[in-house]
Length: 226
Image 1 (cartoon, one colour):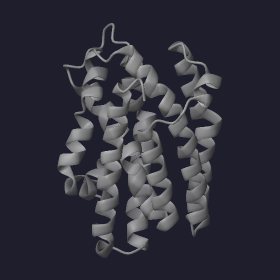
Image 2 (cartoon, rainbow, N blue to C red):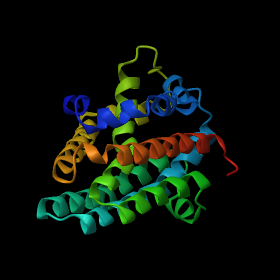
Image 3 (cartoon, one colour):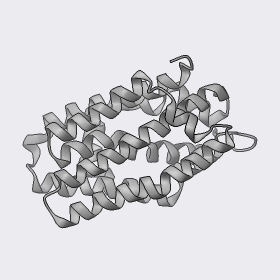
Image 4 (cartoon, helix red, strand yellow):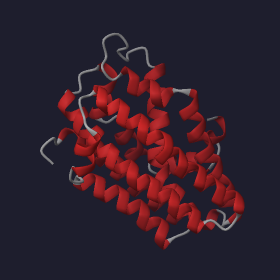
């Protein structure tokens, strides 16, 4: 993700360094790294992540509507297809290994944190443009790549007998890193087309709030009674 180091994402991250650090270094992430996270918390998180993915797919549908070029429509359509035709199946299979049934996950109530972040993203896209939508999604799309890469590179991360090693590997994998890099590059291209530096205060506010809501999603993982 070398391009992200100099682009819009790096500027957004620097503008909310405190919030970003709280998200990256959250106790939930630390528990994934050393394997100490209670499994009940992880299962709760997986159920809510399933529900989140449904709204993530809706966000890609909204991206297609907000696009004003055929290339951007194709990007959105490809992202939507990747979620509903591949990623959902992979997530369900992974959850099955944790004793979770898809029908039960689909019937589960959305936690407040799930509602807050997913509706925030959709509202950002509805009220704004495609760039606003991608910025609101960036703490999720790019943040998970940064977490996966950081945990994978950290010698303190427990690899042997860590039940969460596969989760770390998923987001450290080159395929997911490429998805995140593409998201960052797309934001850069949209910024060049849709405004320039005058948009930065508004984009910073969007990104900061989205980052806080992502950290709250980690908090939710600990609230198994939510």
